[in-house]
Amino acid sequence: MFPAGALLSWGLLTVAVVPASLGEMYTSLLNVKQAIGVERKLIGYLRTYIDHESERLDDIKRFHAKVSDLHTEVYRGPAAAMANPLLAFTLIKRMHSEWLNVVYSNEAQENAQALRSGYEKEEGDLPKLEDLQGAAKALMRLQDVYALQVASLVRGRFQRVTDGKSIDVYLPAVSVPLSGDDCFQVGKVAYEQEDYYHSVQWLEESVRLFRGTGGIWRPENEGTLEDALDHLAFSHFKTGNVSHALSLSQELLHYDPENGRVLQNVEKYEKLLVSSSPESIRANELRRPTSNHLRTRDTYEMLCRTQGSQQPLQFENPRLFCDYFTNGNPQLLLLPVRREVLSVQPYVVLYHNFITDKEAEDIKRTSHPGLKRSVVAAGEKQATAEYRISKSAWLKGSSHSTVGKLDNKISVLTGLNVKHPYGEHLQVVNYGIGGHYEPHFDHATLPSSPVFKLKTGNRVATFMIYLSTVEAGGSTAFIYANFSVPVVEKAAIFWWNLHRNGQGDADTLHAGCPVLIGDKWVANKWIHEHGQEFQRRCSLNPEE
Image (tube, rainbow, N blue to C red):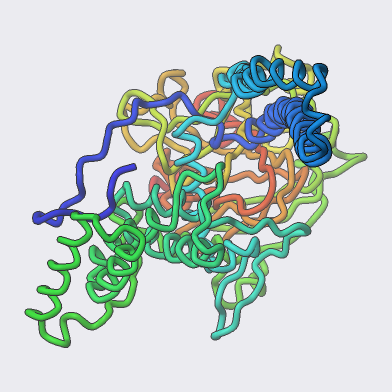
């Protein structure tokens, strides 16, 4: 555990470099669910350990009772009893070997080793350091995007302040409160990224909870009250709150009065407070840092917190409507599809009840073996990114009969040629803890994009199928068009990515909002320009 404070230079002390792990459990809720089965096995190993240890302790208690009874009832009796050769023999035997066997018994070590061996059997399926960090970052992401109060999250609630009142964003059936050590771990992840905005909030809760337990250490905990105070003091210093950093450091000295590093920090804080003007040392308001990579952050987060259009009187637009749609195709005459036009520019349509429960389960089950961390375009290559947390798999038409059926349904509804290579293989996506995909375009914006590897042009359209529902979060937000679409189970959403002249439509910038509660599965079908020459003709107007 590295110290949170700093000496002289006020910089962070060197942190040991942890080798990169292969942990990607946090990027797919399917993997998180699988971890439950692994923990059930660990519970079984621990139960066996407890049973064996209980038997061992029962034996020790029995031996203790036997010897204590002899000293209470026999050895304090008449002197004649002491002359009994049987008593003398058992006393000598007991002192020679029985005490030795009890004191130097290997049973405790054997029981502990059996527990460790069971743990090691499952070690390959346990979360890695990257998973812990990813899960902590997910909590902070949900905190930010949905404006959740850290204090409410700690109580197992999902609340934000609106007009000065705490309101429930989502009310879970079961509330799972966090411990002081849980909060310490989240705060520590933020701290190690020099993200003091989040570290202050989570470490404040950690200190509060640790104080509430009297600072009692529990064997499962990694952090302690002293650790939390140490990290919190330096976090406050880095945010400009020197007086609070001083008081926390002084509190820390009550537990560790000989800590030279903290003593020097206290001295430095006191000098700073003496030499600074009252205005400069006034407690600074904790402010969230601006984002350098996400310029549309405010709009994105506002759309994630709301649903539908944010444009005044948009609901009165006569060009937005619902109907039963056949697309002029005989296959849909007897059973037309419920169509809902959500937006005209960009053109976005929702098709209700596009997929059946069985079809959705077929697709999800078929994708399981191929799920891998989702990637994004990085020049000519593809790479994982913090702004896309999910796992995905690509399903060919031959992988399951349902895939071919969906391709046919998509073609009938859109009138487009979706056969490979004019349409990409079906991409199935399972989002992780707080899984999201920050604002992006589906079409390529650079000539070097991997999208062009199929040599069938750019992605002219997107057809996204909702394979599951979620309890909260997970909406699709169209940033410049200023509306968001909630997850609608068994529905599909369609939009054009390109104008008729082949230029990208900037209004299709969209995002997958973080999943607050639920297991989000979608399937994407990206349709390319080539093969659609007679399905979506160019306009006579070159600007269209």
